[in-house]
Length: 316
Image 1 (cartoon, rainbow, N blue to C red):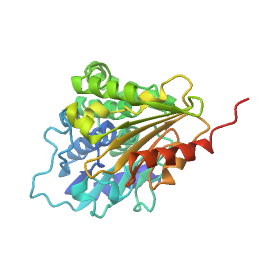
Image 2 (cartoon, helix red, strand yellow; image 1 turned 180 degrees about the horizontal axis):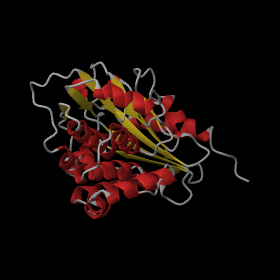
Image 3 (cartoon, rainbow, N blue to C red; image 1 turned 180 degrees about the vertical axis):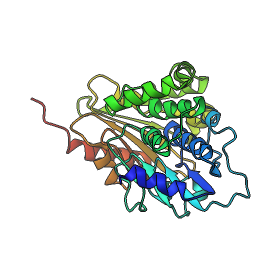
Image 4 (cartoon, helix red, strand yellow; image 1 turned 30 degrees about the vertical axis):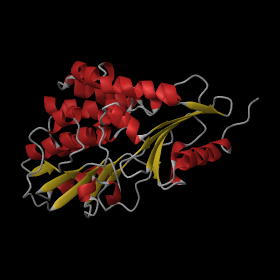
């Protein structure tokens, strides 16, 4: 049996199943959890997504009717789009995980029966395959959740992690009724005033190093609050630094409520974002990764510059 079959069998043998998302939730963790939760209910399981106050309006569309009541006591916890309990949404960071479904290469020491496939563009791809393994036919809600998961983690299929399988699954969920036009509009076309304010901050705050090959932007907590932003407004914002002509590494630095600095790194070949971030206690993918530092922003900037300078290819 393969990993997906093992996980499907684990879920078939379990009940009172909790789907756990990661902190600072995004479209992939919530969309994948929503699709799997609906599929588990379709085979008669009592399944819920554990609530998180960080679910924004765009994400909450997918969790309607799926959030666990306060008295829910799970017997099985499935981590969706992350592999270690410390990355779980804060209220559940000490929970014991029974299984993991994830596409991040930094997942380690996962329970038996887990599925971890770094080659997947998004956990949404794995959610699709799991639902297929469970023998559940996709309905419109599952299809839309999977499309949201995949499209948001691939930048609407623009990122280099997009594969032929990504497109095949996107086609399958489209045929199953995914609300593609509405999802693309909500996540990639319409911009809130908060988003415009954030993009303005990024464009005005970005500084360049090493002949324009490294771009770093820092946004303070005070600036975020003044701009009246939420997490949706920062979705994929770090790509703005990387999408500038000539930039090989783009870094977005955000000051968190506790004063720590959250770094989101985007890179082009041959620089490995996950390798850089792992040196600072973080992780992710080769082209997109992150870490959190307790240092001041100016020192984090120096750390990034040092790490990048030693990895930049020599100019011809």
